[in-house]
Image (tube, rainbow, N blue to C red; front, side, top):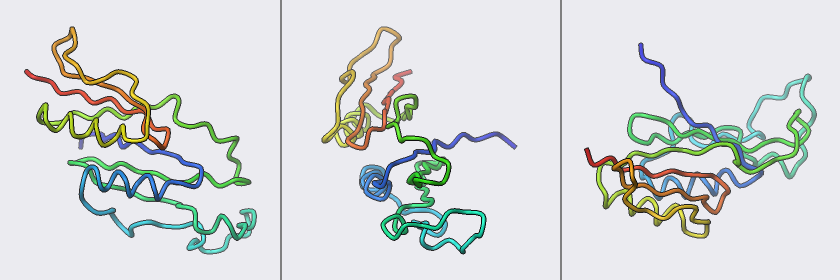
Length: 146
């Protein structure tokens, strides 16, 4: 059995908005039970009580993209999480099947975000661009011509 890597993204209360955007960009439906919320968890004596405003935060969501899953959740203040720092250390690398699809993905993901490197032909022979989307997630789009 081959090992699979699934990117897992953390948000500070806007996970559902981000994943609805990604669902629009990539198509498909959320896997499993859909959007699971912290307020739907069974009560546990070992966890701090949920503040009312946190019950609607996303505990888990996953979106199939090709044969992989993009997964995410909102952090829960008071559950041992430190201060939230938007995705400065993680990129998600997407390898589309065509130059046109690379352009479409780049355009839609960069809406409201920040372009780091516009799509262009690179010295290594691929068509590449990188960006930070409006949710703070960093993406690399890489179309390999050969």
